[in-house]
Image (cartoon, rainbow, N blue to C red):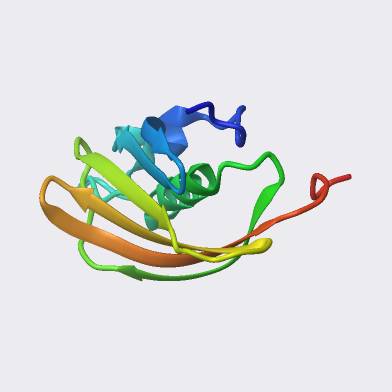
Length: 127
């Protein structure tokens, strides 16, 4: 499936698509030293949120999709060196409002869950 959104995003920071199909995406990144908040190797939660958001946008897969709201829970820490995977699923529904459920894992451990409210606009948000 051709990805129609976020074509200029830095995949090193927000994840590289690994699987994309209608209403679903799997996006992955490797937590690097540059994402750490301190010497212990704790990865900043903003990178995990960015990965989840990127997965949600690709699951909707429209050039004019934007994030309107998110309700998220950070469940476990992510460490430098971890491979982090986000899976996003668009819930059934019609119209411009898209509710997307995202789960982020490291191995078999869920580290983040979120509900993202996305909107598909008629034109680009900056137009």
